[in-house]
Length: 414
Image (cartoon, rainbow, N blue to C red):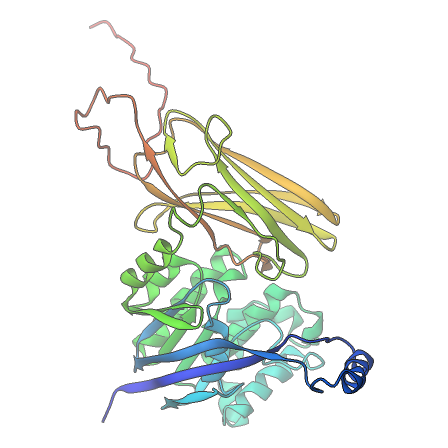
C-alpha cells in the first residue's frame, strides 16, 4: 500500500481578469448598453491570470511539508484547492484521509455561534459523533486559552482568540491531514511554541501536516520537505533547507540596491488597515546600499500609510544570519496611530554585526493579535571589516554578531 496521502498532478487554476468597465451593477449594465451602439462586444475583454500553473508534488503520510513563496505566489490558492473550497481549472489532486484546515481568520466558524457550538459544528462536519467531540472538548478549550469566552459568539473574539480556538479545533479533532496557513503570524510567542509542539506531536502520531509560513526558522524546525512557489509555478521541491535558500535568493542584490518602493497598494506589504510604501537601508553617508562596514552604523527607514486608526501598532525588524538563525528582533509600538503617512527609523549601531551575509525582515502588526504585513519584506546585504583584527589574524570571528564591548583590566597586587 502506498504511503502517499496527497498527490497533485499538473494542477492549474485560471482566473479571468475583466479589463473593461466594471463596478456596480448599474455601471455594468450601462457599459453593455452603450456597447451596442458602439457596435462592440457586449462583454469587456478578459485576460488570463494563472494563480497556479502546472503544479505537481507528493506528500507522504506522517510528513511535515512546508509551502513557501512571496505574496501572490499561489500558496493560498493551492491550499483552497486542497481543502476543496475551490476546484482546479485543470489537473487533479488525490487525497487519502480526512482533512482539517485552518486557512485564515473568518473561515471555518459561524460568527453568530459560540465557541462551544462551533467546536461541535466542526467536529460534525468531519464526521465525528457528539460523544467523540465531547471526549476532546476540554483539551481543545484548554489549548486555546479561551475558557472564559467559550459560550460567547465568536464574532466578538479578537483575531488572536479566534485563531487560537480555530487551531485548537483543527489540531485536536480526528483527522489524518492538517493544513495550516500562517497560524504562526498570529498569537504570542508562547502560543506559537504550543502550535509547533502540537504539529510535531501530530507528525509523530502519523498525521500529515502542510504548513504555509513566512517564518523560515519555524519551517526549518518543523518541516523535512518544502515546496517553493513563484507566480503560480513550482521553483523548488525538495529538502526544506534547499527551499529556504532558494526563497531567500529571490531577494537578490539585483532586485534592489538598498531601497524598495510600492506604488500599488495591492502589491505592497500590508492590509486594509495599513501598508508599506517604501523601505530603505542606508549607509553612514545616508545612501542606499547593500554592503556595509561593520565599524559604521546602518540606518533603516520604513515609510507606511495608516488607513484606519490602530491602537498599539508595532513596527519591527528581524535580522537573520546566513542560516536563517535570528541575530535579533527589535520593534517600536505606536500607542495610537491615526490615519496618515509615517516614517519609522531604526539604527543598527556600529561594531555590532559580524562579517557576514544578512537578511533584514520588516513587519507591522498588533502584538499577539494580528500581523498586517506577514513579516516578509527582505533586504539581503553583506558586511565587511576594514580594521584588521588584533586577536585573529585571518579576521574571521565566530558568531552572528561581533559586538565591540568595553573591557577594563585591573592590576591587583600580589
